[in-house]
Image (cartoon, rainbow, N blue to C red; front, side, top):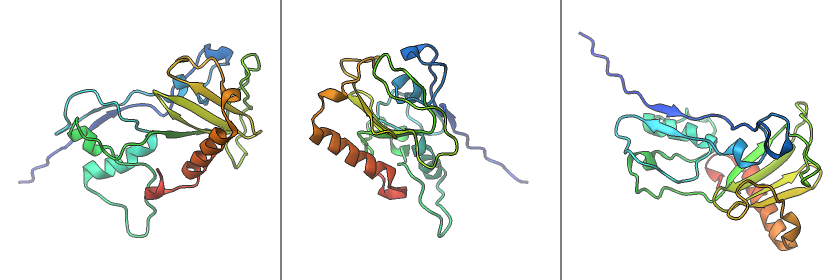
Length: 194
């Protein structure tokens, strides 16, 4: 007699948000704004503790988490996946896991809103570099650097809807430190990512 034991985990999320009328933009999903990048994540499965978690988790954290809860590792010679497993947070609501303070966001297609001083560019699928690269700390700020050298900065504590680009208020040293953080995120891979 063969006994099959099924262990099932349920992950509910999305690859991106969506904007429809926000910031006077045409419908889309490729911007640095919260409505495009902040997503729900609901997980259920054996041993998972009920409750709300507030850790910053990105889509690139899913692969190492799935490997972790499945107790599997990459084949010999395969590159490590980007991201960090958040399995410890699933099993222990008080876990502090190796928390990150920022999450990387980049896009190969954005749009235009010159009224609010927001620089964007059209969809460019043949490009070898993103239209923008940015990072966000959901309860703090969002920063993005565009291909044309322009940038955006939003104070998410004061301007939750991200209507006022405050990049002109930043010092050159602050912008340089943000660009340095972006370079660390953009050029990392596997376990070398912050």
